[in-house]
Image 1 (cartoon, rainbow, N blue to C red):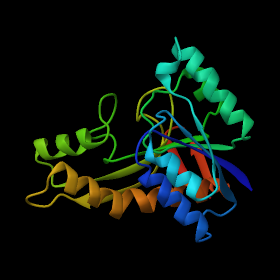
Image 2: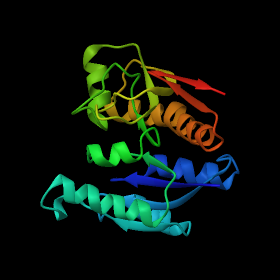
Image 3: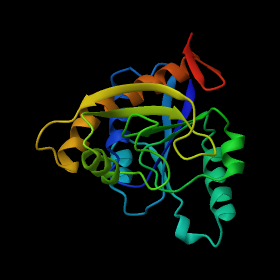
Length: 207
């Protein structure tokens, strides 16, 4: 059974999708061991506590440097013996040392079809606003491994979602979460925990 650490900063809707999947028995060979928030006020912490999951707060602004922040994160991850790290709306960029230590063991969910509308500065409603401003007809979500380039790691799963006439960033965000993010993330996590993901360069294969 692999230990899963979930890093959050906000409401925790993707965390809830993982918790629900775990309680339905869909996270095969994996369990959420801890939830670490970059924001002490994040509602995601309440979601974790309701389900008896250990929580911790590691806020970037509490540390003088990014290196100290990374070391504090590493300490928390090591204390819960994390085998897999999930970025579920975590708003801080991870440093190179942490990414290197957990190479191909960090997974992020992004609310667009990478490589479109991704990278530094594309997060939350900003992604969906950019999709609407561009006039795209299709958007979606991507689950990928994390490397040193924001949203630049190997893609695990993607799902397309239609952009509808009259959409606002809020309505589009809700549809992308419901139709793609909440389905893809638990599936990718379960595949990882079962040892069914094989990475070759930029390609991720199912075993």
